[in-house]
Image 1 (cartoon, rainbow, N blue to C red):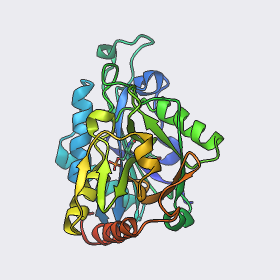
Image 2 (cartoon, helix red, strand yellow):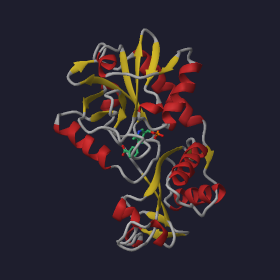
Image 3 (tube, protein in one colour):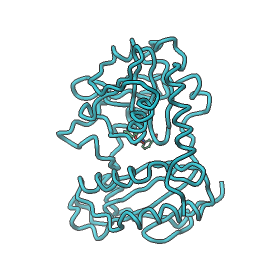
Length: 292
Ligand code: PXG
């Protein structure tokens, strides 16, 4: 791929020059927040929601993003245009900035913001039709008494280690439970099951990220006439579901056809899942903030 142009603290720079200090607390402590966003046919999907979640994450960790919403959006559009892409993925990151070797964030001079726009394909195309194999991980979602699972922070070590576990066990995604043993979500995606025509997904209070694609599914399911219930789920509920799928900005909507070697339903992508995938694609192709 051609070298990318990266937006870094107000400037578009070559990929090779897009550098962050080794004293940045984003690197030293995972002290920062981020968003992963997609754009389709020159329109950024659910941009307002992603920007709002970034500000909310930043607010929760006392990080002041110095750009306002309008400036942030323009920076994203400028980065997309500089890279000549019509479809792709945006990684928007705000770090605490350069400080000293102590934890004290008040010594960090200024947050750094950077934006990467690139192509992404998380899973080979075949998995969107045949479905993913999911494995339950022993690594739990952090409890809200340590870090709120709603903060999309740069602390993704538990997710990374859970993903390692799932791959070592021969799966493509890892199911993460909360401290109580209830299903929270997967390592980078929310989870839904379908039983007798009703959709179920864990509550945010079960340790799920308030996923933007998850919200989109609520809307699409309502449009298609399906009920969605947010409730505590156990692995048993997934083992015995008719259908299961995962949602995320990167993964989009993808069937999950096995959990811990149990076939879910027929073991193939379910009919309602396929309807939702189609409706999702239509929506991504027909809505979004135009890149200007
Ligand atoms: N849960 C977690 C923990 C996430 O990080 C989602 C759910 C889905 O949320 P959205 O708003 O995107 O529908 C995410 C976000 C990756 C990757 O490379 C995925 C995410 C974040 C960072 C990297 O798979 N998904």
